[in-house]
Image (tube, rainbow over the protein chains, first blue to last red):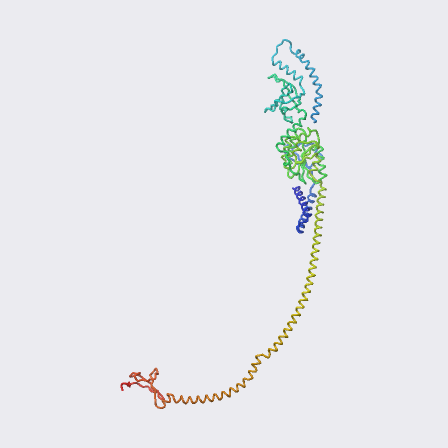
Length: 82
Length: 482
């Protein structure tokens, strides 16, 4: 979901900059989307800052139950899936 | 290609065996003479049995080249066919256990190299070759299988471009289906981490070669599709022989990739290795590292882009504000100008009003003077003056009236006295004074003129010069009766 949010936010931001650079909007409209643009760029930055790096491994045990655990170099036995 | 090379090597090593076979076959009748005493009658079964053991012993492992024909594959799973060349043929059987290991389908007319052992089918007295392995001649078995499956799946539309899903520009969660032991996972993790250091990666470890690899890869894809919010999946492995990569040509893998709702990037072997998984994937990356590059952008670049967009927005707004400011300044100048002109006009207006005021005052003054003049003229015609003059004459007239009235009154008084004396002489009372009386009816007081107007017994009143008399009529004497 966040990925989609970021993607649409970036796309909207690009669109806003393009729109502003065309310079054919009335001033108050321009100010309005400028504010939106500033807000979007802040949000994008926030999404990027808040994202954390995480590597996990999804395995299935003998009973067919799936488990997720953090990845470590010890995982390197080819844990068969399933 | 590797397969062929192997076969070439195998063929080379077999040549010595062929040589041995050749020599032993020369001694074939000799061996018969040793095992069967002359002139001894044997049964068909005995002969067949002897042939069988002899043949099986001597042709236990041979390589044979020929063209496939009369292929039959009954429900049992065994495959029967004939191998032939221009002049000869031999029956062949591929038992189920070997048949299922074939990667490609046997086709009529296909030139093959087979490996097997000869045997005799005793009920029919027919010798045949039991096949262990079949390789298409010219291309490898895997290559042929690849072409066959590719053709079939392409016909189903599995590789169509319009099936391909777009790869998200900014994935948050990336699924990776590969072996944990290979170089591929290290490469992928390293590149992902370098480019986008804030990523959630879910690895599903699988075998990437061998018997179970295909099924494991397919199930891993299904499992990742079952997780929420996996944005893109990398499926792949590092380089290897075409046999090593074979799992990625398996139908179960191709179909699992086709069925994935999450976009799949394939990363199998090196650039030159192309598997069916590559054909069906939404994006084919030439290597695992390349797949990682495709999947995530470089965070630093995105941050740069964000900054750039922000700067551009700011610049646009600053320019815009400056130009608006200029326009405003121009407007203000205009307003100031207008105010200045307004003040001027106001001053002029004040002047004009002033002048008007003076003119009006002047006018008023002159009018007032005119009024005074007219008033002066009018005062001569003042009716009050006339009245006063009139009033002054009244006593004079009154005096004259008085004098005149005295004369007129004396004259009238005189005439009245004379008339009164005349009237008095004509009064009935005066006549009564001379001894006359007047008869009235009572009570009506009517003056009687004729005797016949009264009746006998009627009461009358007689007025005398002094006092009255009540009389009763005793007799009426009319003139006519006199």
